[in-house]
Image 1: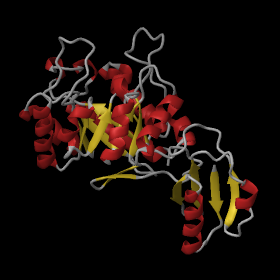
Image 2 (image 1 turned 90 degrees about the vertical axis):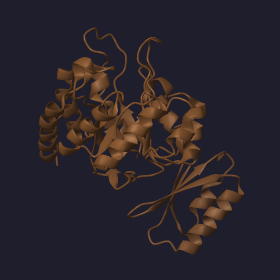
Image 3 (image 1 turned 90 degrees about the horizontal axis):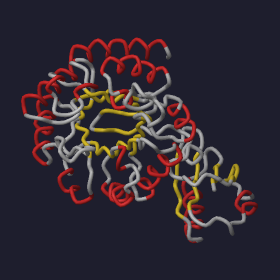
Length: 333
């Protein structure tokens, strides 16, 4: 249920209403917008007298929400959420460029790539320390050492770091990581999502390769319902009948998610296509579709990359793409 307050309501009256609603056993999500404050009532509202609430002089309207997701719902939070990652803002008109290698391999590699993507306009550095691989014989990442190397690259460049977490047991290693990424395979690891809700750090939540948008939003709901509002949604392609690309990039998901939710939505054209030459056109299309950012794989030596070299851009290719992205963003203003 949503209770929209009238503009200019006194703080004391608002707090009194919130306190009364909480006494009825409800959780209250308060969204203070530029023009209006929205109270999102979460819990069993079936016995709430909507006419009584609507009769209050500080209440503008009362509506019941049919969707199962509440915290992530734009109806509960009409204004875009803006997430601040050490000064880098994501959402609400702020565009983020996340770039770096699929996996961290050694100190020289990650620092060289970090410097290159920063000079090309990236404002966050991605790099896998723990790698979920289909084959148990493939490179699984450097683990704890990989996180330490990412910290070195952050110190060298100032770029906040984004890296994937696979297990609740690894959370202590991520205390000094700026953004925790939940990969497609873990999108419905609900124990992990709950822990990330209480962990408090920004979470980049990737859509599973066979999951619906509603399922993605419900996964984000797990994180937010556990106390963490700093969630970034990521469209990274889904598995369809495509036989030439790694996945099918569902760009319609971008405006649909932004209509349904207030959370920032970014796109990963690298995993969506699996082919480096396909990344630039799909990245530009994602920008035109209204994405709040891009996460792109960049490697200084893709041919010899230990993971996903085929979909990684070289630093000079990323620099060229970055300029085109800026041109598209300017064109759609």
